[in-house]
Image 1 (spheres, rainbow, N blue to C red):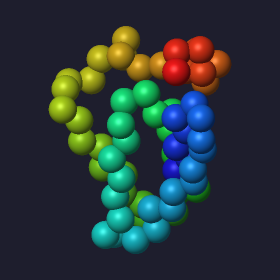
Image 2 (spheres, one colour):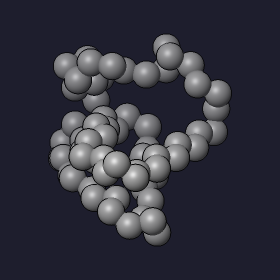
Image 3 (tube, rainbow, N blue to C red):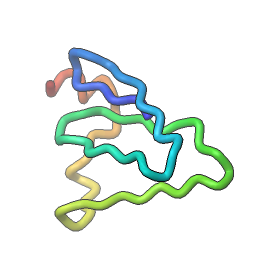
Image 4 (cartoon, helix red, strand yellow):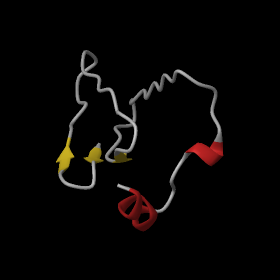
Length: 64
C-alpha cells in the first residue's frame, strides 16, 4: 500500500494476518500487489459518501 501525505511517501506491506494500518484523513493511498488469497477489510466511522473522496492525485496535491 502506498501512503502519501503530500510531503512524504511510504510503501507499507501488509503481508501477514496480524498487520493493519489506520489511514488518517488527507492521506492519499493506493492499494496494489494483492495475493490471490488476500482479504481486505475496511472499517469507517461514517457511512460511505462518494463526495467525501478525492479521486484525482493532482486535486489531492492542490488541497494539502
